Length: 592
Image (cartoon, rainbow, N blue to C red; front, top):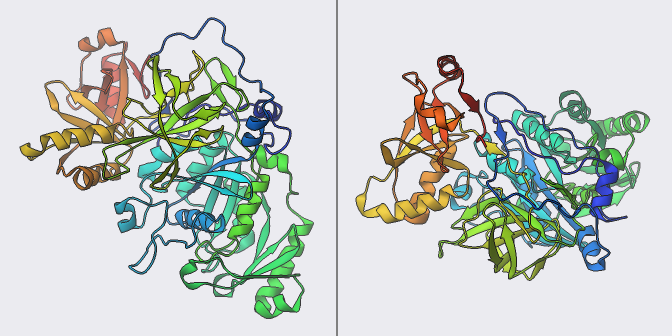
């Protein structure tokens, strides 16, 4: 897995509160931990931007304005991602949030049959065929006075680049854990990314309706494996076939649920005290005895609930339930909205930028080509950092210095779009444009503002791609160009073979998805030839590259910006190259 190295939002609770410009509704954050690499297989860093130098004296943007509209709109935003190991129930939980949030009237199923509705977030045909998330999805809806920006992410490690970029655009995260398996490898990696970015984490122990680990063991895993304090907000009334509901620790009420066909509708619920005959009769005697003992144990030991510690990332609130059957979903949603934080600022090169500042700023964290099959358009996903976004506004694209007009702005809900006239900090806006935006671009109304939020991945899998049917050249070329602009697959050019690009990606599944989309969306069949490289390093100094000695299995190529990149089949060959060329500079990120 590539390492994650990106700038964190803000540095302290007090600074967060100051930058948000809110006294209530956007709680202060905790100290953001420094960016620390997770390993040394392949790092990723924020790419350098070739832009004009900022003005000699930049205005302070860590202060807020007394705009009642901006303060009110910032306070009611909640922007968060749902992350998990594959098959833990992340997309199912996303769909149930939409159901309980009133955004859909009937919940879809990840493995939908002909008589079932498919999920909203998995809108690609291939996602619905395979029952897995391939691309991150943005879903915006209103619930109980909040404007929610929910981002569903892929769980598979081959799509981790998309997931990590999404985590730069959110303020909190919900971590889903399969109660039958406990903490798995990808969950652990995603947790580390969130922790290093200072993102508060809420935990949902899912699939309690199936054979599950002991609830106390699951809580202990959070503390012993992840090193974070855990505070159970509710407790399961039984597990597996005996799972009947949850006991809410705050209200001291038991919630007993009834199953609905396919979990498509809200589960009917009854509430009563833990010792009420209704609860005694619903739960089998052995499970009831264990619940009473465990609840008593919880009250006498463990962490107390500390909202400040939650926002600082020292404690994770833990909720138990079953997303498939809608058990405990609303308690999780309501609890998350109550205890999570609103939009927080981001650090630009010149200093922090507060969401309450009047000047509009934002950054691009995702590009999706061909969302509408009837048009060859591109949707640029923009996280609003500060100020007020207005449709048709003119902004500066920091990377090029050019002025662009953001005309076709939409609220995104899966594949669906709805034209909007304005957006506020925390919102994710979909801008449909033909302008050449790139992942990581900063758009701003203030000259000199540049965000370095988006990490850059060094690919680990390589393959050459070409068009086997000459008559399809135009479709193949146009489709490949648009799909490469999404940034999850990189293209490299080899000397003497400019017509056959060499592709690089984090995982091999990305190539499979690329080929499928070329054929299904653009009608262009492609041919893929695997290459025996596993390591990529940018090399310098540029003026000396032509004189370097290359081992027989090492190849020198150029990236999309013309920068020299060294490709090697393994670390040994990379070390051998370094011995032959001691003056060479090798970097896992583009050299300035």
